[in-house]
Length: 154
Ligand SMILES: CC(C)(COP(=O)(O)OP(=O)(O)OC[C@H]1O[C@@H](n2cnc3c(N)ncnc32)[C@H](O)[C@@H]1OP(=O)(O)O)[C@@H](O)C(=O)NCCC(=O)NCCS
Image: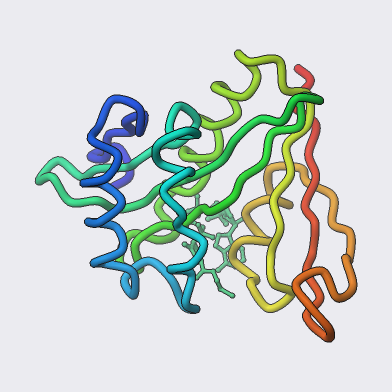
């Protein structure tokens, strides 16, 4: 099923239109409210790092927003696959496409941050080789997060 899906760089698309479309379908993509994390900066200024997955019938079925820092750290800000398209390899494809973009800009390490209860995100990144570190209170008092870190060296 994943092969029927095309990955497109966000920079090739109309950023504002894509953002509005993804927010309109928010609950098909997310189990928790992530609307405030979809700041336009991820689509406009950092759109060159973003990847959108589209089905052959034109449906948005997954996306990754991220960037690379000045010290060559790639950061996955948001990664999601539409609820009816999970476990088809699409999350892995989105990450691999981001890896390639990040490596082309000189990134050596990639990180993502997950909620401790987000087994799918943790499972995906660790399946790709990430190590996991607990960041106590990272999102506020009592709100721990896991930092997932993986080398991009080939
Ligand atoms: C995380 C997410 C992007 C993974 O996308 P996906 O397309 O389903 O992942 P893939 O099919 O590429 O899976 C790749 C690997 O990741 C791991 N994985 C994926 N989903 C998993 C799950 N639910 N539990 C454990 N491991 C999982 C597996 O190792 C899997 O390989 P396998 O299928 O050969 O076993 C997707 O589950 C998602 O969008 N989740 C919702 C995110 C969300 O709402 N987060 C907030 C919750 S607190």
